[in-house]
Amino acid sequence: MMAPATLDPAVSAEFDLSLLAAGARTTVLFSEEEPSGFSLVHAKFGPGYRLPRHSHSSDCLYYVVRGEAIMGRRTIKAGDGFFVSAGQPYAYAAGPDGVEVLEFRTETHFDMKIFDQTVARWQPIVAAAKANHDRWIAEV
Image 1 (cartoon, rainbow, N blue to C red):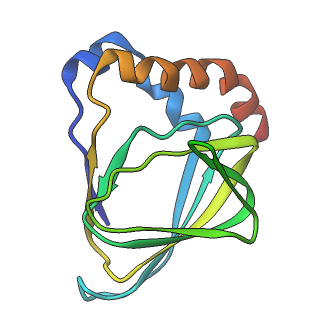
Image 2: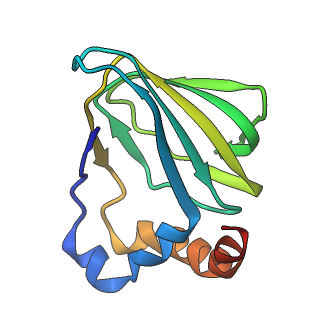
Image 3: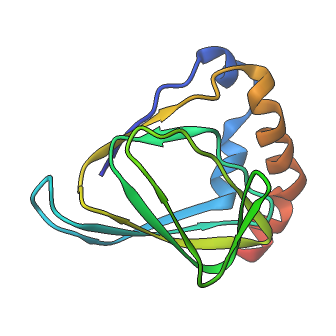
């Protein structure tokens, strides 16, 4: 459904990015066969999980099912949503109890571009993964 993103090899060489896998789960709930068909994905991120600043090639409407998504100074709670236009960079962190979102798109195939491409930008992302990894594993 989503083409893999490109990441600067220096980031991969510096950090063990496999730690992030324990904090993220995605499930495709619905996907039409046509490339311009509708799709619905459920994404779950563990407490404190930080997504890098990135964009997608498709518009997306997000609905928070459980927990909180923190975008800068804005906290999006369960029952709230947000819209991100295609190509618009964004990032968010899961709140203290994690976050579950539904992602509604009018595309079944799209890509992801990561804007955080330096070791310095990935330090807080990996630090959050290290700090929360054991909790993520325990909650699976």
